[in-house]
Image 1 (cartoon, rainbow over the protein chains, first blue to last red):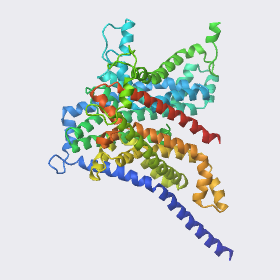
Image 2 (image 1 turned 90 degrees about the horizontal axis):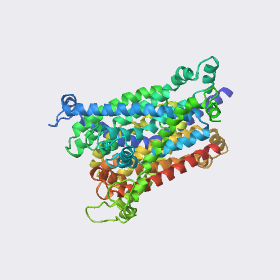
Image 3 (image 1 turned 180 degrees about the vertical axis):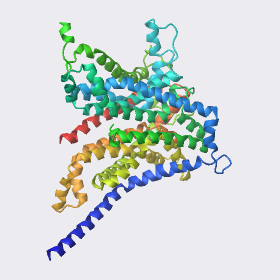
Image 4 (image 1 turned 90 degrees about the vertical axis):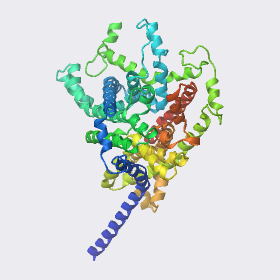
Length: 294
Length: 282
């Protein structure tokens, strides 16, 4: 008797659990529909367009153009050069700052965090515009340098690679600091104490204990910055003054000026694949919700 | 004595202050460079000159006048106020699309099977991962077919797409820190699931939801790339108009608008920081 009613009971519980499962899936449906309608379908369509040639038939001409045309090769070189340089500079100045913040008390670290977050949430355009004002020929930076007697003629900081790099480093730095700082905070301070008690000098303890433990955060930050740089548009368009052409700008001009959807799509697909590979590596190194913790 | 000051220990591993001086110096310089450059637009916005000279020789409010009295002005000038109004409208509507959809999805993912969230989570944050330029031209192509280009609805859909992952991540982590058994208790006492959510869970994660919606607002308000392609004509957004103006000529009105934007976003950020800590303390 007991056995039968237990079975019935369990069956009913399983049925309810399955019903619950559908409810939870149902709650995610609106999100899923929007992502499919607004990303999967449009990007899938662009993917298809990238294989359509000028004459309307299937062809690989849009991809062939990329390694045959000098203009495209130059764009790839520029895009990678700017992205790599920005990433390296961000790491070089972001690591000390993140390390400094990780050594502070929680209260002071939070104050520094607000300082990192304010530019993060200030409009990209505002920050790019500010650099345009600062770096121009008669801007503050040139004025200070001339007044200090370091230079006699104003230097050209904007409408070239230098200006683009300065602006991009400023915009990307928080993306490097946030995962790196989170990682450094999580490092057990006792590790450093242990190294010290075993006779390591502070410098040696840093190089052999702290640095290796902070590598996952650093690597995650580097990869995020690099991927974001690859697709960057606004800052190079304004601070580069038309002289620094990156992939995203070429995509845009292919559509706005030449109405060449095939060429634009192919370039976009290459960008997506490169970004996808890098993000896949990143996801193996750190959990995804840590990356978005802004 | 200054020497004893520099010999003070700054960590538990006998690092003295003098060993760390370079670290403090670099950190302060970097923090300075993070915050101060953006602030240069504030004095610029009060300059009387139409050239970008710094420091300004004369002061005036003309660029603010230019901005606030730009309603439907004739050709050759930007209608900044209409663009601002479009941006505000779109950003508010984005809150109402992105926040409920993101919150529902977060609730479903937290409570559903781990397999479900393992598959869906990467898909749901894909709008943050796909290069935004690709999303923008894809949306443009897609919206042309449905006559959604240059419409508020098109902009709201595009902006919700980029705002939803942020809402999802914020509410998801709030729900992860929350003990779902409290809902079970309510339901064992006879409440429906919806009532248990509304009366037990919602009050405890409401600050996270409010800060998620503020971030959705800001994300939409600052968005440029999607707006560049999807907006136009009467429905240009403020960031789109600013970008186009910056690409062509340097209009100091942008300094005035930038100053206003800095105040708005810092205000919202402070609000988010205050709200973010509130859920955890209760």
